[in-house]
Length: 267
Image 1: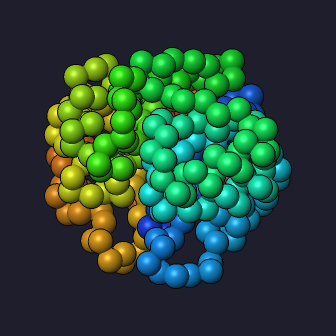
Image 2: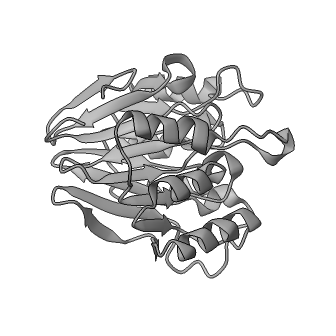
């Protein structure tokens, strides 16, 4: 932790997402927790053996909040271990899709007496005294979840002073088109869906105008993420882009005026 900075650390969880946010005052938020797809039939628990190990190495023993962007295994598969090990005070959720994995998580959260908070487009609130959060998706009036879980993604911007980061989850082009119509400017962009070709549309990049971007993806993953056309769009927009598959865990520090980068993360 660096005093006075908003820290954003992309934890290297391979083909998945897990991002640690630390406010200037030391409040902690974990957005997603990595995980392996069910078809792998693996007993390796990324939440326990990777994310928890990283948090403990940082001397973090409780989280103020966790956020689940959407109910895909590479985002929530590691969250059970996180809830049990770090007993967050709050759990943020965009849409309750009713999936079995999400239902199990919510049951654990209820047993641990966590406050479960639904976050939808238009919500604005403080996380600590200096960090502002604005929710861009999912839509507030969404009565039911989309048939594509990626379109349910919780999308948020965290800001301190004149610097900010837009966290997209796995949002795809339909969601990005809506976001592009709003004031979505951000200094740093967490590239959606691990650099899939279905995201990071030109309209979004024009609206966000990021200086930096990062992509969380597994080394030589079977999906071909990040896709060349996405990297080309970022380069054409003059965005300095980092990737966990090449650098491992990486960190941005925002102080309201400037941005520092570090990888591996500074403790």
